[in-house]
Image (cartoon, rainbow, N blue to C red; front, side, top):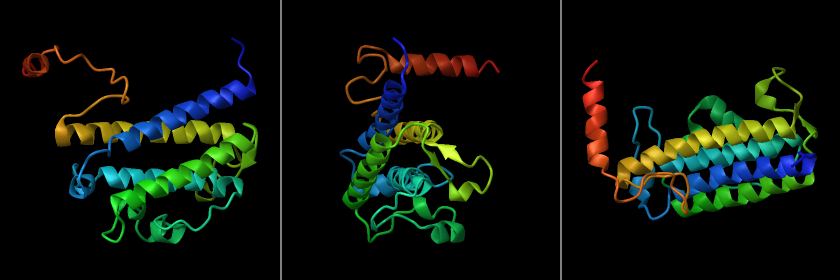
Length: 197
């Protein structure tokens, strides 16, 4: 199959959405506390990952291409992130998990519109990059944001596994061994190998 700009854009868009779908899926069925509880030494939370992803997509698919987003409660502005580099990861008590997930759904719709309406070669400017790497194309931004969301979906997968042992790539295809696979024996085998060093 020959790659054309249209099917290249559709492929990039699909991978972006698969990563963000996986991230959202990792939050399903958990309590507000489980979604907010830091699980790593750096304070990473599942809900914080979603809020950060909303800010990423809003900035890269909105401001970068001069497509201002409507005022959406919960997005952090540049001044807030300048004052606290973790601001877009913190979900305060005034925001429920449902509100953060709704915010991300709205941002995703706006990002999808940018991707649909602009050609891959459309140029934009990422203000927070300074002159490094600017101008950018929609193609570059799609690759950049997809890579970042895939990384964060991986973080979410590990956090969710720590909460209730749920793991996997996607809802309908986890890419993990079946239920009959002896994970305890597998972990023991890995421990025995590690203990040799």
